[in-house]
Image 1 (tube, rainbow, N blue to C red):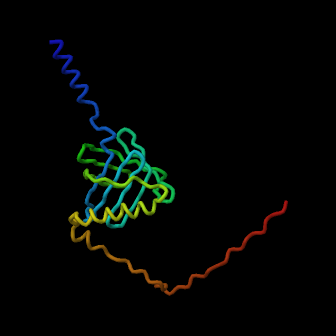
Image 2: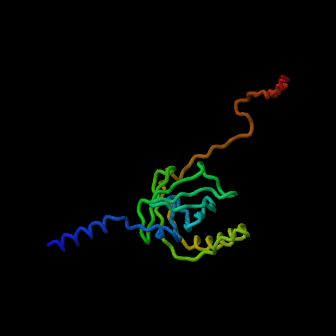
Image 3: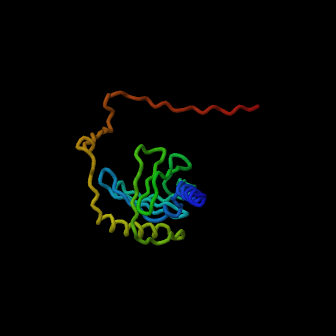
Length: 185
């Protein structure tokens, strides 16, 4: 009886431990947005690359994997985050699915694993590397059929037409700022 109890406790302890491994998040992922656009994410130990059909995004971030989160930060010369770092919390992680949640989005993001190879980053020729990666992405995106899941109301976004003329016909005076003379003490 003691053997069975010890075996049961061992299974319980092993079963209660987290099953997600940080390495499971590494790889290539994709998903279709609600408005029918296609996105790919490449997650490595050093960087996160996000490419999208619309808006045409090509975001390259530094990243760090901490427990169940992916901490991303801006690489100099690339897209700037609203804050110095953003944290994507892993809600579900398996070999086929990765669900992430961050501070700015209300809906979690579900990524699906895809299998394809990509060229390692060529930091010396970053722009030519980006062009090659983007060219390969466009070929894969053309094969995807992402449906537009928005309602007719969501699709009908009113346009704001800004007229360069002053609509109220008011004149706004421009007053030059006078510089104060420095005080000599």
